[in-house]
Each structure stands twice: as structure tokens, then as C-alpha cells.
Length: 90
Image 1 (cartoon, rainbow, N blue to C red):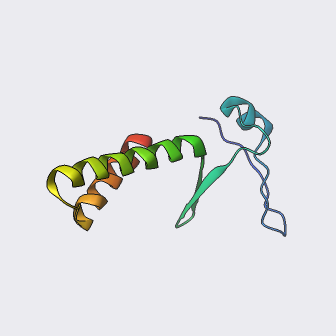
Image 2: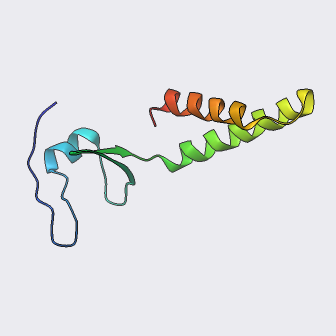
């Protein structure tokens, strides 16, 4: 991993350095999700079609399970969401 320096504008905009954009194959209009913790900012490419597919899969699993054993509890839903997020690095 290489380090690059960038500056935030007065409007809060940050330029992702060209070499980083090239390495990650980032294009204009790509969406990024931003995490902030203490003094760190982490950005990750957001693949919306993948998220939509994941959500649809969760709904399908939930409906199939509900048909077999009744409605999911909030604890079970939270556990499934956590597992999917973990698999997708979200």
C-alpha cells in the first residue's frame, strides 16, 4: 500500500490521487461508502447492484424460512445481516 497526500477543500471535497484511482480502477460517478473513526477515514467502493442482490437474497431466505418455521425474530435477522456484511466486507 502506498501513501498519498491530499487536501480537503473549504467545501469538504477531497481529491483521490490519480495513482490510487488508477490502481483501484475508480471512474467518475463511482460511489464510495465513507467510514469515520477517531482520526481515520476509510473509503470503500460501493457496488449498488451487489447490495441490491444481497438484499433480495436476504428477503428470499427470510420468506422461505418464515414459510417453514414462522417469522424471524429480530435477533435472527440481526445475525443474518451481520453474516452477509461480514462476507461482503461491509
